[in-house]
Image 1 (cartoon, helix red, strand yellow):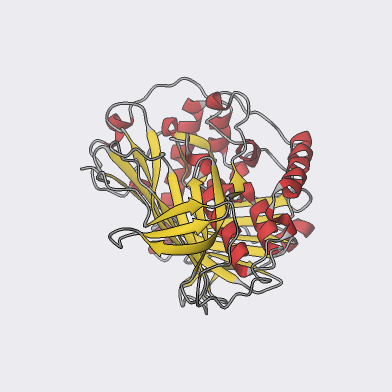
Image 2 (cartoon, one colour):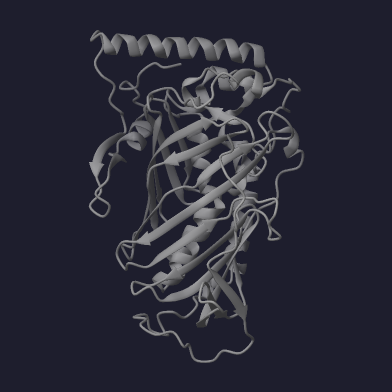
Length: 452
């Protein structure tokens, strides 16, 4: 059964650029012209220069390559042909289909373009800020364009830290808080003016010709100075050609980004690939609206390359009234994907950031993903040894679960996260309760379980 069917992937609006700047014909906006003026950092030249300096700093201290991927051919169809409709996280998979990163590290890759949030934090207008937040939400998919392998499923209690205070301004911590269903909690704090947190559960199924991966959960982003609090969810990723042909990935669905303080919103549409479409593939479109549903910006681009924004200066209904025609100023580039490292095709198509995520570091918690022996062996190219180690770790995890269910051991409680109810959304999720970085500072890990 195919997951998606060919469909009209054109957006519900049409844009027309104009070279003049007539007075806006939009009505009902409660944002003044001054409040909507473009900030000095709207042009990303200055921000881009700083980002390049940060990358040079990081690359000067961190690795730029990992061992090349061995050429071990194995048919994915031969493994999952009897798993139609089943939850893939419950199916033991050989390391041949993995990449040497855990899901916690893959989740951390959402921060690849954290400078977009640095820029958003400095925006004078909440509408402009929302444009950058939307670009950031789309940028997190750029690393998936060629990544057809799957990350390691984290063990219960596994953690992953990424301390980039010095070069990128943030600290990130993930913890696997549930095993069935698999769920990871993530918290990021940046001294450049923002915090991000999320709890994500992965729903993945085999549908015959494709595998769908649907992240469930809400992403929260708050800016420290304004208090603006944004939420959104992720779209569905689909791996095609499971039975025959070259594997390829598509992203599809809608992302509804809401500022719960100002009630500004943006709906981003990730258009599914269609053989019959004449439009660009991997297309993303969106409109930024204020609390009165008045449109101010049009967003367009692709999730694997770039996102642009254009200010709306007028609108009308197209013939037939089915689409809105927006008249806009010339677009401005908000985000552009960085080129992949040299020889990336032989290193799992990892980005520059991904190449550093599994680099050994001193002082991390004993449950950190960098310390997983099966993942470390796989990265070194020792896949047979990695498979044996993976089987051992999974069997020990099953034994720990049996002891908990029998009442021999206490039930599992996350170390660094606790369940709370968000007052904006009313949803209950695991949120960082503190303590990890203090434990690292004094190197007291006595509370950590032995999972490796």
